[in-house]
Length: 304
Length: 250
Image (cartoon, rainbow over all chains, first blue to last red):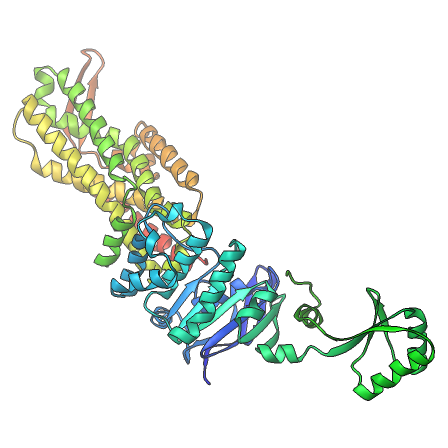
């Protein structure tokens, strides 16, 4: 599978501060690439550099196999739709008029306007001024603009920002459907782990301008090491017994957290606890959540 | 390019930019009717010169404000809707800059043509001596447009670079007043200020006899050096302004 976007050693310096450091991104063809990172990590800056809205301080950007420069940028971007930060629109024009402007500039036939309005379910609101749209409708109009001309690649920067839960759900479903229905590759950024977890097939995690993880989402899940949590009627005595057996454990929320153990080994320790008259009332398998993995990777808390 | 200019007009639908042009023409019509109504035989003989002397004075106050408002109305839609980051992915920034300028220039050209039409109609109706001086009127069109377009260019650069339109509108207001003020200074000083070029390129001079309290008007030689200097200023401003806009990071 070839990559839609690759960046090599991408850097961006603002003043003396490196906001993006040596970023080597690989966005594979088809599917949703989740670009995850806390606020201020450099996600928007990176996306703007890919679109040529901001000049990189150093590094190389390749889109559709071509190195992007100021001469070929617009011809490459003909196959790219984008929604960066907040949606762009003319508030005094209707939704349809807004789309007309972008379709003319993209050289897309007028009938495509109705198609994208249908995809984002704005066909009944197209004659309303965009300034009177709700936040969710503005966001959908922004997405409709990005979808004009059926681009091969969509770059969406925090598309669910400012939406209510129903709007978030709707936008998420829409994004997830794009690769299957229209064969698009979607690069979507978010500071919400749960969101990326539900949308992405591949994920890149950026922290303080550096890429700390990049692979399939399933690989990230595999990184979560399972452990055992037990709850007893006397956790203190149980901990002492396990410690004598060379098993390290730590108490948390009324449970004792043990490392991953083989089944027969665990059965031996439980039976020993029974022998010592320590009543075991719960045995659970625990997996590290994505948030914990993120913390491990970056040492930074991330919004939920 | 034609498409980009047409889109600028399309984008400014319902923004009523023409209202400012209409308001200006209306004010000038009232002023010319008031001025012509008080004319005696001596004034009527110098009628065409009277217009060509007074209108640049009026223009030096009004045109910078109109140029500032037109440029601001054309550019603030992009800031309000945060559309520059989208437009920058579908069209070259330099083309957008040029299209906006041409669109604004067409509004101002319409304003100056209407101004000349009002001048000719009023002059003929009032019975000014002789036919309308076509050559002088063409020069008036050229010089007024040259000064106005250079001011429009400066206003557009400011309106595009700064989201806060108060900056560009304040420059327009202060510039208009400064331009009028420099008309009372020696010509060397007038040339230093962009807004002073309505005065530099005036086609008519005035002799004021304090004893008889009679004002005599006469045609003055065309200041081609001043026009050339303005053209150089325009080119420099266009190149600098365009480069700043194209290089601006979103």
